[in-house]
Length: 338
Image (cartoon, rainbow, N blue to C red; front, top):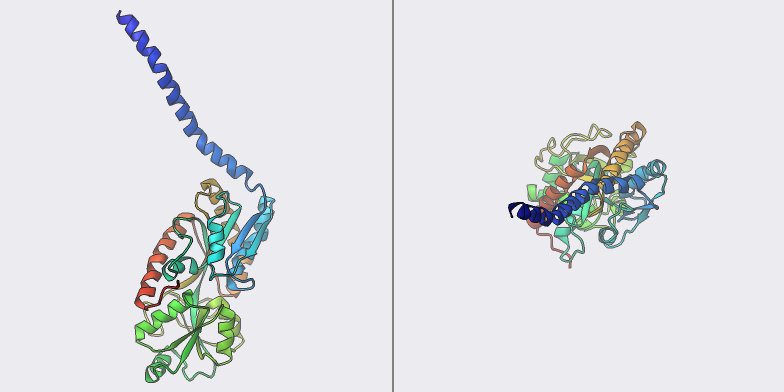
C-alpha cells in the first residue's frame, strides 16, 4: 500500500516536473533570443530622426555617426529631419516607432525641457525611450554685438541694472535651453532684459550681429564661427571650465556669476523596449566612432566636446535634467504652452 502511494505521488509529480523544465528552458532561451536579435540586426535601413531643421548644430551628430554605422552594419543609417512643433513632432514619431532598433532619435535639451514647458505632450522622455548614448556637450555662450558698451559680465550687469527694460536678448526660441540659461542669469542678478525668441539659433545670431538684439544666449556651436570672425563678442560660457576653442573667454563663474553652469548636449535614444543587446551594440559602435581623432577634431572645431556616457549614465542624466529645468521654468515664471 505504501509502495502504491509512492508510485502514485511520483506519477502525479511528472506534469509538474515537465512544466518546471519547460519554464527553465524558456528562461534560458531568452538571452539566446536577444543575442540572436543583435546578431541579425539591422535587417533593413535605420533612420536617425533629427527633430530640427537640417543644417543646425543638432544635425551634426547624426551626420557624424550615420556613414560609419552604415559601413559597420552593412545597412544604410540615414538622417531624417522632422523640424516642426519645437522638436515634439519628431520626438513623438520616434516614441511611436517599433522598438526594434530601426528608428533612433537625436535628442538635445529640448527633450528634457519640453515636458515642463508644454501642457499636453504625447511622449514622456523617461517612460517612452531607451537611452543609447550621451555623445557630445557644449556650453551656452553669452554674446553681444561688438558695439555693445560692455566688455565683460560685470559691466553688462551694471548697464542692465541702470537701464531696466532697455536692452533685449535673442534666443533660439521660447523654452530652448539657451533661453532658460539666460533666465537663470537674469534671476541671479535681478535683471530686466527683454527676451526676443527666434525660430532657431541662426536667426537669433543674425539679429545680434545686426544689432537688433544687442545681447544673446546660444549654444556655442551656433555662435562659434561668428565669434571667430569678430561679428559677435563672447563675454562668458556656461560650462564649468573654459571652452578649448575659446580659451580667452571666461566661465560665468569666473566672471562673477557662480552657480550658472549649464550644457547643451546631444545624444541618441531609441523607443522604449528596444532589446538591450541591440542598444549595447549600438552604444559600442558609436563610442568607437566618437573616439576617432578626426571626429573629435571636427566636433571640437565647432564647439562640441565628446563626452560619452553609457545608456545607464545617460538615463540618470535625463532624469536629473528633467527635474532641474522644471525648477528653472517654475522660478522664472515661464508660462506653459497649451
